[in-house]
Length: 445
Image 1 (cartoon, rainbow, N blue to C red):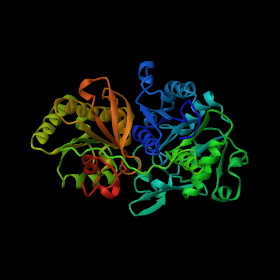
Image 2 (image 1 turned 90 degrees about the horizontal axis):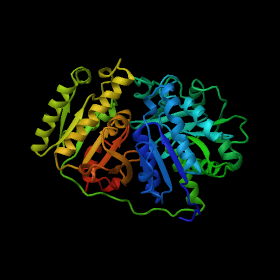
Image 3 (image 1 turned 180 degrees about the vertical axis):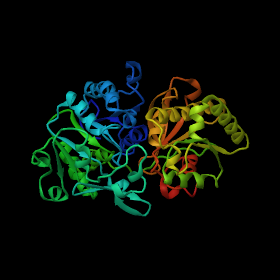
Image 4 (image 1 turned 60 degrees about the vertical axis):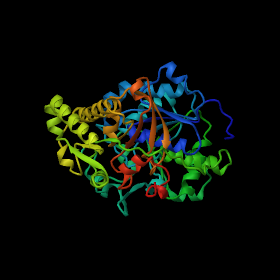
């Protein structure tokens, strides 16, 4: 690359683990070395990655209260400031999961601005590469073969924690902060100079439309041209897609032609706390190609934790002994199974699934695992003795295979895939077992 810089180009604080990992992969597969920490790194851990262009920390703020955010987020934002990143990114979900009482993006902006005090805060939720679009302020997302407004999305409209009732991004977020919003519309993007996109809007927070890669390139230029360092931004991994588009268009980084792929393995360990119907389809398919489903009742797990964990662990070992891959799940397209559970109870379910992953990894020769569910992944990964990840091999955007860094010798070679509920093809579990890699090759390995 030809960007002359000794400090990271981009730093991000992710509001969940799968989204944080998705940002990591965008950077890595564009040829930029990036590292994702699972918490604030120690000086020793940080010293192992002095040559990175991207640095991130995964949190669970999407499932946390504003009070939790006020206590924890300042340290994360200060960390990015200390790393002298050019762009400080609060990474949120491309389906805008948030509410005033949980996962509040507005509260995160308030906290971050105490550190960065950016004149303008661009908000880019859209990511056309992932079939996430914004037009005249309204967010759209793929639902099967259709693209629908986010408040009509079959999953997001009925999300058990943060159901979306308004697709207008600025209006949705305005319930979470008192700061002033404006929308950068398609007409603005196509009719004005990118370097004036934000200064012309007369508001602090600018929600950006994007329907095409050309729009993304222009937004990337607008963000990169802001004079303040660091520039604070909010959005999905669309932020990194936009910046990379601009860097490539300007010849600042080279295009990447080769797609990495990991070796296939005989077995993987899979857990899922996702309520998504899409994940349910993936679980059903996996059970036809060498995976054995192990259902776990969520309430039973909460009430009889030790017994359920012990029984599930033994069942999974039996599956492994039979040459199959265990797929442990607490829901399969049935949100009512988790309805009424508190944030703490859902966190406990994720933590229990993480305990199962760790115990099975350390008791077998398997070194590849899949955790399905955005919030689940955050709580599960915290149970593993892992402090950082690098991207290893892609699948679909947002669901790559990762290399884990751990101080535990038994987890030294761990490969882990973190998948949000809506992410991945129907054969995703099998694809990760085969080593990820180019989509067109996944059926032929």
